[in-house]
Image 1: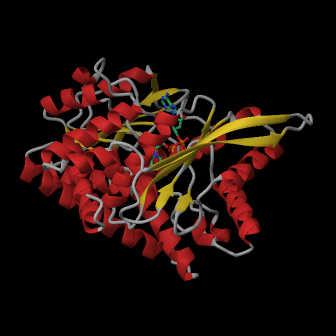
Image 2: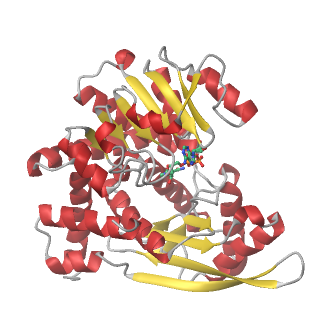
Image 3: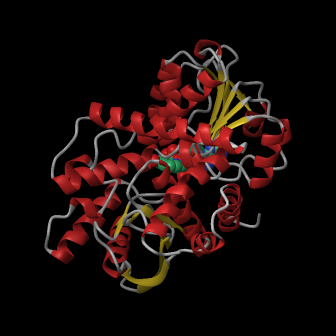
Length: 411
Ligand code: NAD
C-alpha cells in the first residue's frame, strides 16, 4: 500500500466484502462525508505573519457528532487526516460510542515555534474551524497536541461563543473538565485486551514473555499493568534504543529510571540490543506501541511471538498482516486494542454534557466493560465469518454504521 489512506480503504473493502455490505454504503464510507482545508494566519514573534495549512475531516456522522484528535506535524498530509478519521468512525462504533469519526491537523512544526506562536496557531485553528461544537465536531489531542493545547482550544471556543462548553473539546486537563483516568486509558485498554487474548490462547500470565516497542504514554502504562500481573517483560524500546533482560525487566524501577533520564537505554542490569531485533525476539507477546508501519514484509516472517497486540495506530502494513495471518499469529488490531482512549474521551464528553465528574474507579470499570464487551463480540464475529480479528473488528463496526445509515434513509 502506498499510504495510510490506501490502507484504510483496503481494510474497509475487505470487511465490507466479508459482510456483503451494499456497494453504495461501501462507496459512501470510502471517502469522508466532509473534508475542509483552511489556512491560519499567525503573527510570529519577529512581527511577520505566517500562513499555516490546516485540515479537518468528518468521515461519517451516522452514529453521532464527529470526534477526535488534532495532529500537528510538518509533513502532515490530507490523506493521513482522511484515513485517521475513518479509523475513528470504526473505533467509535466498536466502543459503542454514539459518535462519528473526526480528525484534524495543522501542517506545522511545534518544536520550531515559541510557546506564544504555538498558542496563537492553536487558537487560530479553533477560530477558523467550521463547523464546531459539542453536537457537531469535538476536537481532541493527537501527535503534537496535549492537555495544554486542548485547554487553549477550550478557552478559545468559550471566548468565541461566550458559554462554558466543556463538552466541545476533549482531552482537557482534569481541572477544566477532563476525565480522570484519561492519561492511562489507552494503555489500560491495551493491557486488558492482552490479558483476554492470553487467556484465550491458554497462556499463564507469570510464564508469558513480552516485548514492547515504545515506552511513552501508551507503552509505559501497558508495561506497568502487565508487570503487575506477573508477565515477564524481556525487552522495551524507545526512540533512543532497546533494552533486554532474559530474566525480565523490573518495570517499576524502569519507570523511575525513565522519569529521571528521559530514556530506557542504559537501564542498570539490562543489555542494550539493536531496536530492530525487538520484533524478532523469542517472546510470546509483541506489543508495538510507538509508530506506524513497523511490522512490514521485511520482518513479518521473522516474528516469533504468538500474539501481536497493536497499541500503536497502524503498526502493521497490510502485506505484513497477511503474512502474520498465514503464520497463525493471533493479532488484536489497533481499532480495538487502542480504543481505550476514544472510550474515555466519550466518558469525558458525557461528564461535560452532564456537568458532573466521575471518580477514577468508575471510569476504569466502565472502560473495562466496554472494551471487553467489544473484544468478545469481535472474537465471535471472527469465528462466525472465519476471518482475522482485524476484519472482524471492521465488520463489527461497519454493521453498526451501516444500520444507522439505512435507518436514516442514506442508502
Ligand atoms: P508517546 O509520544 O507518549 O510515546 C511514544 C513512544 O515511542 C516513546 O517512548 C518514543 O520514544 C517511542 N518511539 C518513537 N519513535 C520510535 C521509533 N521509531 N522506534 C522506537 N520507539 C519510538 O506516544 P503515545 O501516546 O504513547 O502513542 C504511541 C502510539 O499509540 C502512537 O502510534 C499513537 O498514535 C497510538 N495511540 C495513542 C493513544 C493515546 O491515547 N496516547 C491513543 C490511541 C493510539
